[in-house]
Image (cartoon, rainbow, N blue to C red):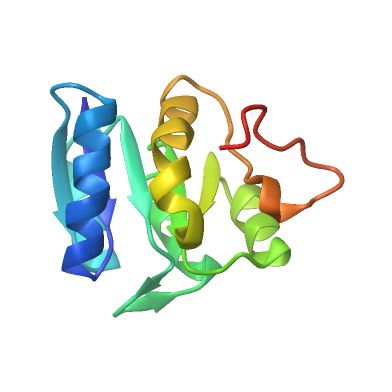
Length: 140
């Protein structure tokens, strides 16, 4: 399994990398600190999962996801971002994210969300409270 972590904070990348390696035994984790590096890496190899922060040095907000998906439309993306705003979550899902995990719950929810996305499902956080979207069955 090949996973790309896109976040500009080294500690976050280390923690998420450890969670990914524990969740998917033998996973190879690659990192990018900005959107340009992420697109370059994802264009050159097949990733099974991308964990994408929305706030990067050269891109911010839902536009980060839109730009990544435009360059790499077939790569499953799980957004892991600092906002719990329902409109942002809705916009990310509409823009092609396979799931969303607020960073405030990432330590508890990331493993389950990643497994859901890799298996073809969609992870919607319970805290999103979006009436027309079904939350994750196991709460994470």
